Amino acid sequence: MTLPIDHPRRLKRDFSHGELIADAFVHAFAIIAGAIAFSVMFVRIDIIQRPSDGVAAMIYAASFFMLFGFSCAYNMTPPSPLKWLLRRFDHASIYLLIAGTYTAALSQMNDRAWAWSLIAIVWSAAIFGVALKLAAPGRYDRASIVLYLAIGWVGIVAIKPLLEALPGVTLTLIVVGGVLYTVGVAFYLWQSLKFHNAIWHAFVPAAAGCQYAGIAYAMTRSTIT
Image (cartoon, rainbow, N blue to C red; front, side):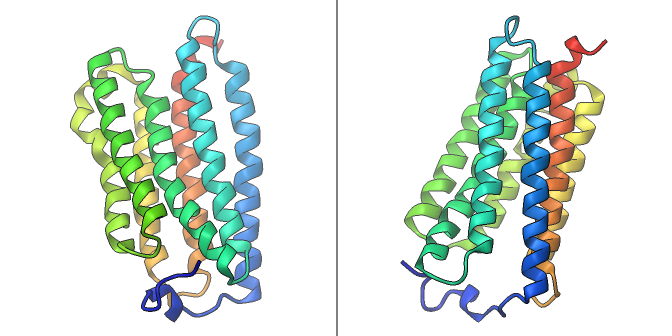
């Protein structure tokens, strides 16, 4: 199970020992920080009053740890058939984090028609992306980047109901996270830059952290005294 013969990844330079250490540090930090952050979120959520928040938070947390778990496994594994198998799940899990983040944010919307419509759109697109990554590994990678960004920014179509439903600080942090993800893609593509992979991976937890903070505030504001 390997990448296609003509795949651009085969032409990339091997990462240096220092680059791999930096990448490992970024992943370890993200996973540890995520474990602490989601533990706090679950403690603060009023699940008894709003069980839907608990379900949304579990989906969100699962998608977060799937992404960083598979990403760490893939990037730390030496070139081998196992590495290319992990690559499928790493890239597929990006779609799951996008959809999981939307699920948590949209659970706070009072306009259920908008919320369920967006959830359906986002998860349908994410499932399509996951299927593409698993069924056609190494193909359509540039198109996948476009799809990641398109799904990530689709919420703009519901900006009015989102403004009405979510606290200003939540929307600001979610948008800042989206911008960080988008800017980070430039470093992912800048493959001649040393440490480009670690830099890209640093943008991911920074962006995820901003969006987590915004969503956690919206979910737990009723318990904040």
